[in-house]
Amino acid sequence: MKIGILSSGGDCPGINATIRGVGKTALMHYGMEVIGIHSGFVGLLNKDIEVFNERSLSGILNLGGTILGTSREKPFRKLLASGDTEKPHIIKENYESLGLDCLVCIGGNGTQKTANLLSQLGLNIIGVPKTIDNDIWGTDITFGFDTAVNIATEAIDRLHSTASSHKRVMVVEVMGHHAGWIALYAGMAGGADVILLPELGYDIRKVNEVILDRAHRGKPYSIVVVAEGVSSPGKTRPADYITRAIEETTGIETRETVLGYIQRGGNPSPYDRNLATRLGGHATELISKGEFGRMVCMCGNNVTSTPLSDVAGKLKLVTEEHELIVQGLRMGINFGH
Image (cartoon, rainbow, N blue to C red; front, side, top):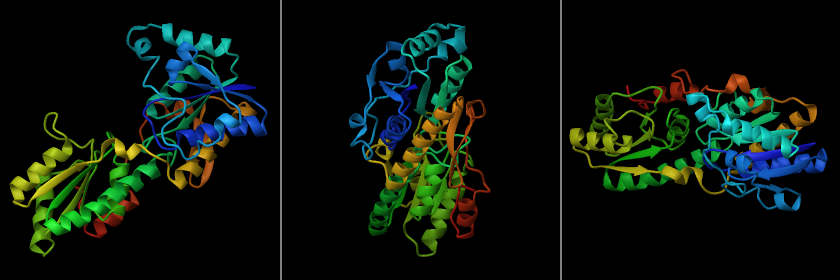
């Protein structure tokens, strides 16, 4: 068999570990041919490829980013908007001319949606979920999430000392447009006093009450962790709005820190390296069995798979019943209400 591998969407720690997991398993265990496709679906449109061997897949386990490069090309965007089928047709044509028996698509929600549409066109597709946001439906966890939480938690840890020394409120903005998984896990691990998530909303008056109450109880500093997707007036960044609202109302000096792309750069954590290796290996196992149109996933501690058609267009969001929120509330942590 001959398989192609591409990575699409934003970069994320663990992509290279996944490429290695898929490629080395295919080459060394199943005797397959493996090609890498550069720059996501752009590479498939342009036939920008390289042939992988064992040597080309060595030394990449611990590297951040992706050796294949990536892009945010969505070949079905025009098709869905105007009925233009040119790009999907080119992709199918190139898939066939390259002699591929399967295409492994490593990416987030948009990539899995595209993967499902390609599967419906008749291509043999396996999806591998990738996002630091941990918001892909159908899997308990995605590689990249643990690394991002580690980075965000370390930043919060460091800000505790500054907040304490200056008796300030520190507002830390972390990634998460639609889902607050990073804010929840890093906020809880970093001992935040207030954690604001897109799913739950917030009342700034309640946040200010918490800050003032802590000050009255002899706790002159507070840590507020906010996901970038929480609401704020106009185009104001959440951290900027919340910082100004706290300082103006409470009179307590308040500063913001926006972590941004730091969270998804650099080397993957050991957990993410092992998770990516397991997911990549299982993707190749599915190919060997001819089980296409599926996305590999984690269910508890088991690697399994789910139909791409079940994943496409869905998000996995934080709910009020999550055990970290329940426990946080018991401990007096405020979630914006």
